[in-house]
Image (cartoon, rainbow, N blue to C red; front, side):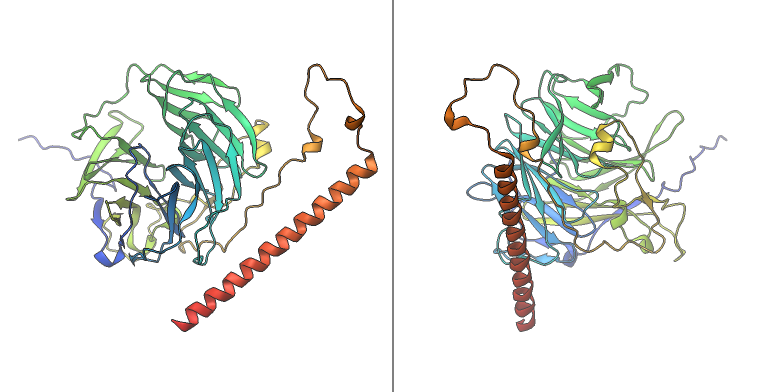
Length: 431
């Protein structure tokens, strides 16, 4: 009598479980925009969700611990003049998030550790360069302040958020709408999918497609799913890929190995209600004491529900085999180093003692001095008396005045922040 050989894997019994009702986030008007992004972004400090908002686009940012019913007057992040289509937390600063909108702009926001008293309306910087709506955002995994955006103009722009400059513009790679973009682990290459049904591997700094022949798959997995968009989430620490169908009510997960058949089905987490979107917690935000290897934030019509993936273990000790060192919040490169051709793997941290997010770190934007820019090439018009060049002394005087004004503005911002903190303490004290 033949015996069926069972493949050995520590992830064979991974199971999903919805958090208790009091751990959900209730009364959130999740956006009804028909767009293919996940509508949700999460990190060890905050949960951000794109919401319905009158008069433009908005998203809500909740401290992770603020579960339960959300006050209808809870402050939003508003500033876009059309719906927000995608949001993404900076991997190197848990207080910084980028948003992309139908209004063709990308905005980068600083989120305070305290709950603000009013809507956040002023981004740190607005990035303008797309001619149509911007629907895809992705921060570089290892270089500081490098952000990718892709728009309905079929263009990918890579920005230095620290200066507001365009580092690279890939405008002749895709003949049709870009559906998704993903960096590899060290940020040297991009993978993109496009409406032309072609998967491209791109070297962004060379501006070249370096791989494009994917006609013969190494593995083919038939999916028993609806026609909704699949949102894939990959965990390189465990080599597990999770597939969440938008409009579906399931999370299917598979282990990826180096040997045939490469893709191994593990299990399916199913619930009654379909998901409108899904957030995926970075590894450093998980509870290692409970052998938690993944956590999702499932969007319903009016709430967000955490779903926890666990490996059953009896021991209370730290499980080294489940938690190899994982990418931490420190960047490995500066933006100009990456642009110059350097590559670096993520800076890893141990989760043995758990992870405590660092306190609020401010993102400073230093715009390049426009006086340093070269004059435009081409014929110059004749110079009139009113066009006489400014003297060196006049330029230096102007620059000094600008510097003094900037310092005054920064001082006022610090004073406003201090007053808001005092007000928050007073409000908390009277509760």
